[in-house]
Image (tube, rainbow, N blue to C red):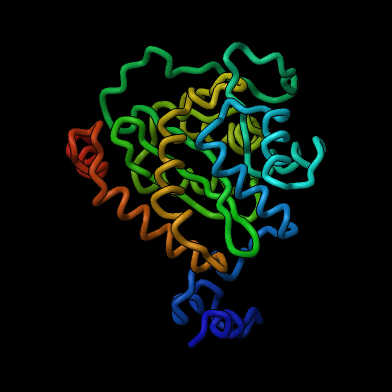
Length: 279
């Protein structure tokens, strides 16, 4: 039975089984029912996909260089439109020196706790981030949680919007499965300076660490995870909807955790490194 036909069979009246039960019976994941891809024009989607790939190569490029590069590629684009699309793909330019960007004075700010920290065990420090995932006719956002000692992905989720509550809910699920870390590191994005996110961490007595502005390299391990996810899976497939994307990423993260050998871990898998040394 076609995927679109199965989705159309989902009923939401009070007399029908709950949506999660219907999804299970029809072989669907709930993301394919609850979430539809965020949409943009075909031209904008093409630019966003270009920016996503370019960021993995030149994260130090700013607006002016990117504008010149896109014009050379034949795109008709101005500064205003480019800045909006850079925000959608979460482009954070790496600066060779301290950024002069003025931060929002009302948002919560916390110091970067990982500098010179020797990480010697699982759940000592986790990192979190959100990235843009292109699809055939739209895009979604991927949120992931990674244990920095083992590179083990302890949790992940998809959404078509970037909300703090979505991130907090995914983190709660990771903690329920694996226990809480001592420290969680993130960037200074609005999701991670929000009350919903900060309150979640404080409720578990987790120390809060944040990258310096314009310094995505502070969260280098999860940046490497995004490179692996995209070059080893996302760019090799063209997904049509949230259900297909979820299934593809579910396969990849199982592969990443349980089968993919990591050179820096002595050619063992993250799951072996995580559980062989877990307290």
